[in-house]
Image (cartoon, rainbow over all chains, first blue to last red; front, side, top):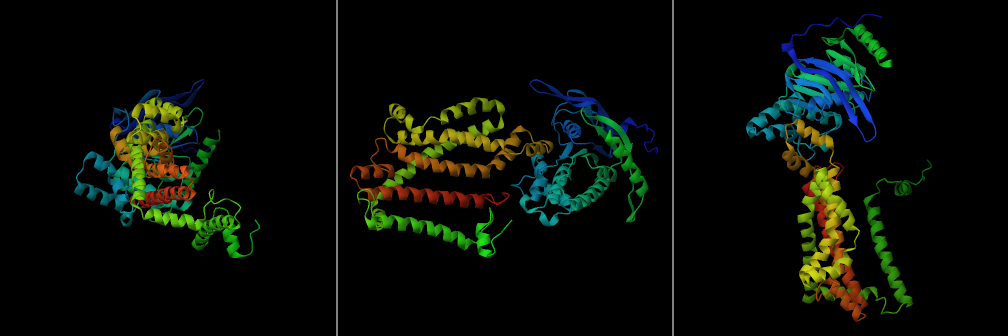
Length: 264
Length: 271
């Protein structure tokens, strides 16, 4: 087998944004307990795009929810920007697979939701929402309600709404999972553009191998029951250069490698 | 699938598909017309005594006559007053309790099992008790309607609240909302359209309990009007009373439906 897995790079601890050490999660029910995560350790560097890839039920979403502070770890430590995660925070924005727009608010009001909670002035709010409406290309829909938008547009609002809060980390839980193939592709490109422009740290959950290779710099491949990290892969492909497809061979090799990994 | 060849027949017999508006209207009109024809037919061949079943035109005349009398409007007024007071009282106490039960599991344990238990007790059975507690005045009548609506309302509001997607709440937490803000800026706005639909149903029940309430020592109101007519075997007036209650219910129901559309234009799939 071709060696794709590169030797571990030593990361300067100053650069580390997210650090998870020995994370376990056990769900207790009346007569049984279920180990969702076992001894998961990973890190994400500042401004890095990292995917967590795995089959359904491997606990990848659980990692994200614990990172977001929506769930508690059974054991282990979860640090973001050097601080232990204790409950949800505006510093960690999240985009869900299900559409979570507030349907009674317009697109603009959705984007301004977090700012309004913070007490940002009307004028400043408008400036920020204008900026992010442009970032996701929804200027024309500023005054529309969610019911008038397609699935892809709803997710664009969700991304804009998170970014408007200026989070340190953007957590994305299979955000394009419910979209059709074409919309999915354009959303992936949009997300990459945003990431390059905004320089946000992104943790992206997916079960789509192509998506993870296309988007991320590093991929954590997971194993199910109990969920643990199987391998860390350096991807960081430049698939397109000046509109031309390049590095296709490496893409295929990586894909093959991951498929073999996931098989057993 | 073997669909009928004729296009109109096909559209009128397809499962859960829309039909042209004029055909829908046709269906509505024809049932009312048939009802009147059937009723008139029975009268015409005279198999039922007029004491038991008045003629349609007699009822219509009596209806028009009633609308011309100030006394009849007083009956309507007092009945509307009782229904709305009972309904409003149930709302003022029931809606907050329902939201509380649908939001906090611990609050639910205090509110829901008790409401489930009491709602199976017939409101009419409370009448003797209410008379002992509240006498036979207006309060007693409003209380009957209140009891009929209140416990159902709590259960339905709690259920509406519970149905709000958890991801919506999670999203607001990650946008910086605290618990209070989640309740007032997310749960309540998300609840409102469903709440209106629930209130519309409860309002229907308030009207059915009105007649029960006015069985008790009333000397005015539409329920009393019907009871009095029965005493004099005046079936025409009984019909008039029932029809007027039906009409009032219909008007209020339409008002709710229109308000829902106007107030919540953002609801997915319309109201």
